[in-house]
Length: 384
Image (tube, rainbow, N blue to C red; front, side, top):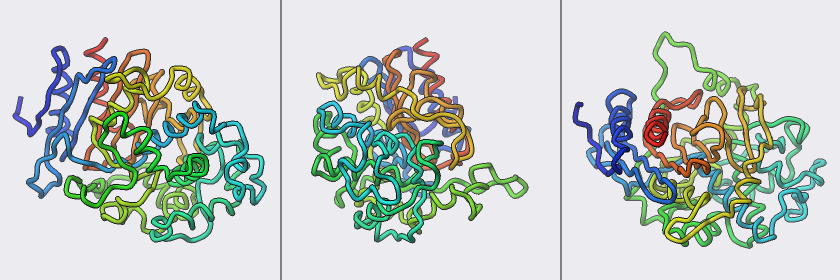
């Protein structure tokens, strides 16, 4: 085995996971990454390696902070389910019960649940918006309240790549009287002792690893389906991902990290993501985040089949991705969320497993990421 720049620990019996992690650097283009697994609340894999960038000698460690893109959505879902457990949020109530302005353009009877299952028909916003509007928050949610649906709500589902965070976040803000980042910090991060933020404090930027864009396709290669659809200015996917303008270009800036973009800019470590999901399916150091019945309800399928935004099969519970072909997790019984470029965090309650994977080198999101897939398969072989 060629020596790879990895460190950390695995419990006896999980050595093949370390081998798979090393192979990601040797064979799959990994630059800097970390991977953590909990089994029945106990940390059994905690690995990290590489550097903060391809030309950066600073090591990528277990404490390196990484933006995890849509992996953030799963954490936002947990916040909403906490409010539901307390009787403060009813997923089947009209959104207007909490956010009266949302009722414009025939949306007055839309249930909250559709915001969390990509059925609201609000994947794209017509009003032109800027990164500065994102930082301000209110212009975004005002535009969503005024927006007519992109399709007949409830009749289909399509990935609300960016708008999920503002729709869910505004409901959480109205119910809790706190920003979604503040609520996550107080009710989720603090009890579990996590390194995770939606809205990064400025003094933590030194711990960040920047995101490295996915490498371009080979000169003779046809564009992958995701890229081709994204490049089509007539597609709903193009509209969903390109307004607000310049958002992804700002992702490595301190201003974007400090903002609250609850669909995309969660920042944390693999260790914290794994611990978080472990606390959803059992106790971790005496703390359990969500009740078993809450998780069972959250995992009930709300949308499945052809996704009118992404153009391929997807499946969602209430706020969480469930297993589907391009986001397999650990198979049926998994719940969590992947992030564009490769990050992922999820749990499988029946197996007692929780996973967290973060990385700086992004890959195309068209299919299953070969790096996380190899790691998950190695874990499953060790536990089976």
